[in-house]
Image (tube, rainbow, N blue to C red):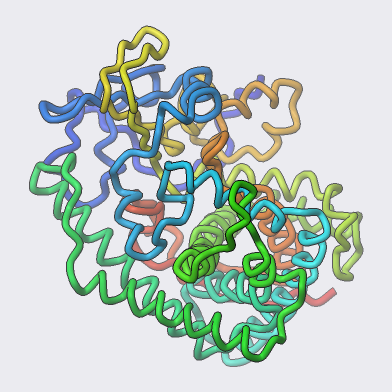
Length: 456
C-alpha cells in the first residue's frame, strides 16, 4: 500500500463538513456542498419528499445496476435529459430497445482496422496542432487551454467522420453553438438548485433550444456536403453509418438518427478535451511525471511519430490519462431509475426510485482508493490494480457504457505522449483554478497557458 501523503493534490473542493449537507438552495460551485459522509459510505439515502433516491458507491452494487440488470435500471430523467435537444435519441440519452439496436448498428466503428485508420487521423491532427502551437509561440500569445484542446479534438472527430481536416470557420461555428448551449444549461441547473428545487427537471430556455437547433442544422449540412462530394473513405464513421443496418430489421439509420450520431461524436470531443485539459494542468504542476512521460516516449519511439503497435508500451503515459479520468471524470454523476420494484443489496426499491452513481464521488471514495485525492498514476501498476478498477467508472459500465471508451483511452494516451514530448505548457493562473460540477466537470474559470516548443 502506498501511503505517501506528499503526492500532489490537484484542485478539488474539500468535502462539506458543516452538518449533513444540503443539495437545495446552494450557490456557486455545487461540488463544495457534497457532505463528507458521501465519500465514506457504501450507500447514502439522498431522497427528497418528492423522490426516493439513493447514492450508490459500492462497486458490487454498481455492477448490478450497470452490468447485470440494465433492463431494470434504465436511464432516469435527469440532467442527461437536458442534452436531448442536442443529441436527439442517441443511445447516450435513451434506454429503449431501439437504443440497443442502434448500439449494435454502430459496433463496426470500433473494429481494429477502423481504430488503425483513426490512429493516422489522430497523428495528422496532432501534427497540425503542433503547427498551431508554433504559431502561438511565435506570436508570444497566451491562450485558453480548453479552447486549444477543443480545437484539437474537434479536428480529430471531423477527420474520423469525414476523412478531412476541420476547416477553421466550421470549428468556430460548431464550438460557438455547442458552448452556448452548454453554458446556458449549466446556468439553468445552478438557478434551479439555488431555488431549492434541484429535483425538478427545468424547462429549457428558447435561447438554448436555438443553439441546439443551429448546431444540428450545421451538422445536417456537413453530412449533405460530404455525401455530395463523396470524398470520405470507406473506413470513415460517416460511411459506417450510411451502410449500417439493423440486425433485427435490416433497416438503415433514419436521417434524424444520422444527425444524432454525427452531432454526438462532434459534441463528445468536448468531454475528451476536458479530460486532457485537466491532465495537462496536473502535469504542469508535476514536473517529475512530465519527465517520466518524455523518457517513456523517447524509449518507445524516439522523437518520431509513435506507431500504432507501440502504443501499448506507453504504460505510464496511459496511466497518467487514467488518473486524470479518475480525478476529473467529465460527467460527474449518472442517474438510473428502477423500472419495477426490486431489491438492491439491503435496499427495497419501489418502482420509479432513482439511483445516482457519481464517478466524482466513487473515484475519491476513502474505502476504495489509497490517497484518493492525490495524483498517483503508478497506482494502476500495483498488484491490487484489478481491485481498484472495479471502482473506476468514468464511462459508466455495461450495456450503456460509452461506446467510445477504448478509443478515448487510445486517443488521450497518444495526445499526451506526443504533445508532452514536443511542447511545454506553462499554466499562468494555476492557483486560481478549481473544478465545478454542473452538467459537465469544468474549471470555474478558463485555464490560461503559454505554449513553448521543446528543441531536441
